[in-house]
Length: 531
Image (cartoon, rainbow, N blue to C red; front, side, top):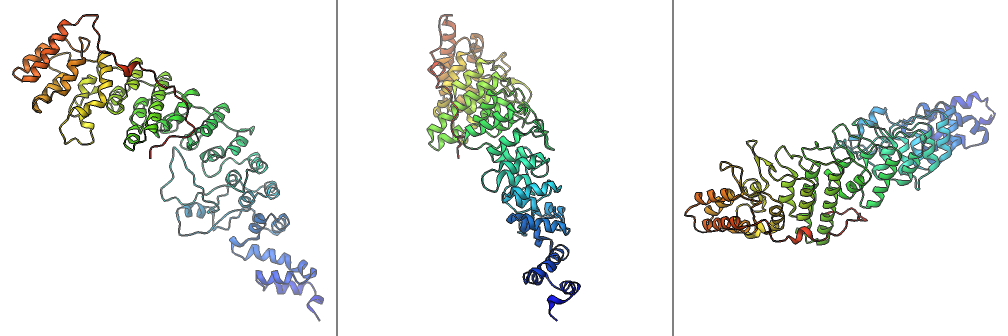
């Protein structure tokens, strides 16, 4: 008697003792055996094979809907990833030692662009929040909440693969997932936030067109879709995405839990072209408390102009300078406090004078009301004038030289002269309200006396100061205190005589830097970098 003639129960009993490979071979013998052993093959695969060897993974990857349907009929878990548990996937994201890939059929169908498989799985109620592991190399690049440094794999959900993988964006698959309620691309990250990180413009458009798109989405750290923006070199693309999000109702001035808006993030990261576009789109620049810096101070300290000059990249330095001026101008217009303190001590005008060496930028701030009379709060909570602080040995320009061990000379002062002329012309004081307070003249005379009468600073002030900057009485008293100090006494005498003889019609020498035309700013095609 042949096997074919045995009752069906007997071959099935034999099948119970076979492994997957043997059952597969038997099912290929004939149509009769296929009808007998194929169900056994599926059941054995579901019950006894390792989870990561489930046939549903092969079916989803290859687009075989019939195989998937059969496996489901015999009890296959359509949400299985082959991992011991979902918790294992999330925990093993930290381990680079285990290269194993875990993914559910829906992940694979989206990755390999099998729309019919995706549709069938969704009709069967497949979950949209099953995590995967090591199916792609993408990472969750949060702007506000950074991932741990040892994070290796991000446990992506199926919609991530529809957004970024499988070739050209498949609008149908992404729409299917979104309409069935795909709210997250991974834990605490929405599809729009995921699509923005790279960015994937086609996917962004599809997501924004959904009727149930929530413009007020926040993650657990309070970040909106805009907070997840990672600027790329192509400024126009980043600006286009910003416009789309704002037009769809994403709040431009929303703060994350740490207090940061997208504007303050762009300023802090020195992405100035993007910050300018945000201001042009209506962003509010009045928020002052973030990283202990005012908005204007953050712009001043994050420019990278000095680095560009040191590298001989003059065109880049010119572009960065124009960028900085435009950003400061717009920020003030949009509410930034031109007198906001940095670390409770320094006003922006002090930082601009010390670090920028740009009279045009200084002029923008002075025109907006920057105060020079109390530009610095000293260590004893006393207010100091801008020029007094500038010439101070601890707070002033000499302290910020590359080599502070060398004696100061006129070359150190040279980069600041145009700015100092502007300040003197605008009435910045070089004296003090009383003889008990330290003035710029005090600082300079004291340093000249110690430095064998190196008087280049005093000579500069004598040449450009007027009675807008010092009183006759103060200079007279200072002459008495410096009696017998040769050249210092002589220079103070010149200043005294100048102040006595000056009339209302006398003006300081014109400052070409202040009045010369500046090239208009235009958004660069690429994000400028100094690296």
